[in-house]
Image (cartoon, rainbow, N blue to C red; front, side, top):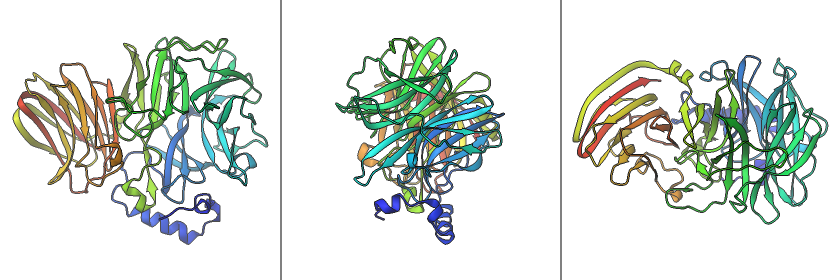
Amino acid sequence: MEWTKEMRYRRLEDVSTEMLETIKNNVNSCQWRQSYHIQPPTGLLNDPNGFSYFNGEYHLFYQWFPLGPVHGLKYWYHTKSKDLVHWENAGIAIKPDHEYDSHGAYSGSAIVHHDQLYLMYTGNTRNEQWERHPYQVMAVMNKNGEMIKPKEPVIADVPTGYTDHFRDPKLWKSGDAFYAVIGAQRENKTGCAVLYKSMNLTDWTFLGEMKTNLPQFGYMWECPDYFELDGHGVFVFSPQGLEPEGDYYQNIYQSGYLIGQKLDPDTLSFSHGHFNELDRGFDFYAPQTTLANDGRRLLVGWMGLPELEYPTDKHDWAHCLTLPRELKVENGKLIQQPVQELAALRKNKSVWKGPISNETLHVFNGVSFELICEFAENSSEELGIEFRAKDDEKTIVKYDKRQRKIVLDRSMSGQPAGESFGTKRQCSVRDGNIKFHLFVDTSSVEIFVNDGEEVFTSRIFPKQTSDEIRFFANEGSVSLIAEKWEI
């Protein structure tokens, strides 16, 4: 189906009930609907927005085009949870219904102030020549979930020296002042981030560009997010336009982080180490963090990427969000682990222990499950797991001892997605015992390696009957302890 500009910018409110029912029926007939991940009721989901804890609940909003699996007129859709596990759809939170967001309510963030949730986002507009002009807008949600949008944007202009690629404000508070970091593109078509300051969340002063040692690092920095953790300053962002380098930067766009000294708001200087990718899988982008009510730093990402086709497209929907992760800084690296609350999903535990020697063993079955595997006493050249497997289908995660690399292979995972960017992802890890912690859903996998040292997030599209879980060791033996829970 060819989506014209008119179709992409058609308003949900202008569509007939019959058409919406047809879309819903097509979505609900899809064999790859998730069982425990946040996914759109219809259409396309992308960036997580406004991740926050407010009024006794966690709130997540996401970019939403309701009428199909393409990037069109974006709304903010609202989902909320008391426990980070069970999410309740709360419906549309922000509609693109003002002059300042006529062509989409783009990404942004949230902060609690005076018992209200302030949501700052980018309003996208286009003129008759289809030229873009972004506005930064501040909506306010009260404890009843009622959203109030302002008459005017809080930042109406793009500063001199930057293009109209100027979006995705992320809020935080330091002392009595509020700050916002915004992703930007310089006029020389290089990516960067800029900073604003406010004392009241209404009147904003442009401070200037964040000073990093990455003057030419991609052509646009999307979804910036600055926070402080374990005594460090951490800057998460999604640079577009990086060229592949070995195992790095293999996806169409990347997401990663810098760790350094705390950002100096007076000089805008951020002294930092090298850029690390947050996720080594096929489908991860535009992450956003928040503080939990107990002080943990939590992250959620978009399990998808722009400009790629997915097998769910023909069913009028695309993408989901990752499970929430807790972040910690260890040895100059962000460690990501699934939040402890996810244990509430566990049902019907199974355990297997034993040696594996030059063989592949079919041990468990499952479509939606959690699996923790610890491999020790390893003399094999290769060990790993085949899951969502049957006949000619399987997804493989393995440790290659010769290369000291973890490899995720989805060349046989079922219906293909993004094959032009390859079917394997890999990264180096320290030698020693290997631990895999998997969360597998109907059409996705999130693999936490060695307690969050690395993470591989990917969509997979196997048949419903592909439910075997196998363990293998090649050219040697290994001792395995595996625990599996149904979800």
